[in-house]
Length: 323
Image (cartoon, rainbow, N blue to C red; front, side, top):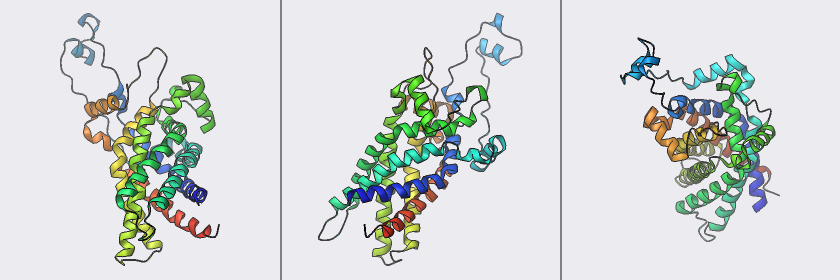
């Protein structure tokens, strides 16, 4: 029964991850908007003799305030169209091999562990799995799954973000295997777990909110006899669970994306010294609402992903019920 839970969760997760990959890519690109101003070091204080008259450099040299106009924020539709115009429609699936590996490692682990804990902690007499136990099970399963899948997560973020970089700065990973091998060769094995603390924290929040809320919404709908245990209930409960997961996880997801994507070169200070430094620089440069960048594509992706995940999971369970 334990192995069966891993297989069912893995199949459903891979199908859901691949089908919603373009939305995830758009989300990553949006989360990185405005990052250059947050991570860039302050401009050098030039001497007046080296500055040009009537220029921003001259104003900086004289300690004059020059207001900076932030670049306009592009919406998810604009970001998607720009990707297609620049690199073609196939670019919407950049990093999909990393998504497959990530779902195979991360989601298979978390779904399987959650299923085991659910079976273990459900009261055999009342068949009740309390909400607090659901949340704890989700936290444990998400944390373990994220630790296992972090290398694929780093590779996926980098492959998805590569297209927004200037051509000379692109990493041009050929596949997830190439990405992992290049990171190991150029930046060391530890680079595969860059941002792992954030990944674990995010995964704990996502899994606890997503799986626990799905089970809870499903129970409420069935117990109150709003709908039976069918497709309508599965879709309603899963979309509600996706919304809860998006609200809870988006701030951590933004910071995780930026930390994983940062370029670290020997002898050069890293743009961020960790998650907290990244969060502070982001808020200072772009405001607190920057932590909810990409929320529309996040919920646009998290909703369909969760619906596909749980609807597929319920169907796979039916197919494998006799095994």
